[in-house]
Image 1 (tube, helix red, strand yellow):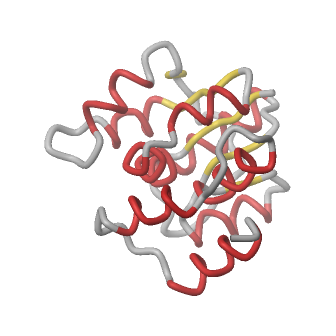
Image 2 (cartoon, helix red, strand yellow):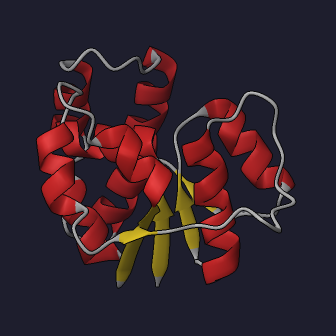
Length: 157
């Protein structure tokens, strides 16, 4: 199975120690060049970890024939959706709410960083999502309390 990842979800997984779960859950992880460029900016959270993790996973994306449109989306999000379509990926890893709406409109199967944690628990790769969520909350990334409680409820924790 192939998953294409966007920057915000990658950063979230890197910050909570969940990047290796992507490799355990999916046969192939890819990111478009624009996403790579966004996450490896010097001084950005988890930039060094992601630079190492993404070696061999970066794909150039041509936007010549892209029909995916969404006002307010960044280049990384657009390239991630285009790569999903062109590579016939199984899933798009994306956390941004606006981008998720556009992805759904384009019939793209999506999950987020917390969805990866839930899937990893379901498959027995981790025993609890709570430690990952606590680490994520400690990083300053904005996650609503409602979403955290929903994730914990789905994890039966």
